[in-house]
Length: 166
Image (cartoon, rainbow, N blue to C red; front, side, top):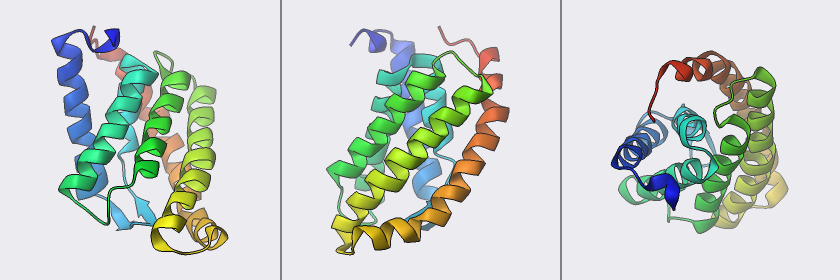
């Protein structure tokens, strides 16, 4: 992958993975099926600076590392794939772009497709509960996190323009 050809890029992505793990596993509120964290900041930074491939790698690897170091259950490939897909979506919408409509589209797409639908499906298979039961129980959490993500990213993401990593 040509995106990871420089040592600086690898180092920054490694730090973003560590930040993602710290924010998601050490500083989150809630439990496995309903959690609140600021881990989206790390994937948004990777998406803005390096694009969809790097953001997918950062968020997917952070999910794997977090599941191994701080387990809340068995590692699940589906949840890791959803995390990587979130990175791809953020990268497609936010790479070098900070327009408010892009932030809203990225967050809404990730919230509806990945967090609400895919993750609810993976959690229903993990917990042995019905899909609709898990989906309906996750609805308030996903709604609250969607609003928080849009608000925080619309303030923080434009500040990334000041940081030159290339």
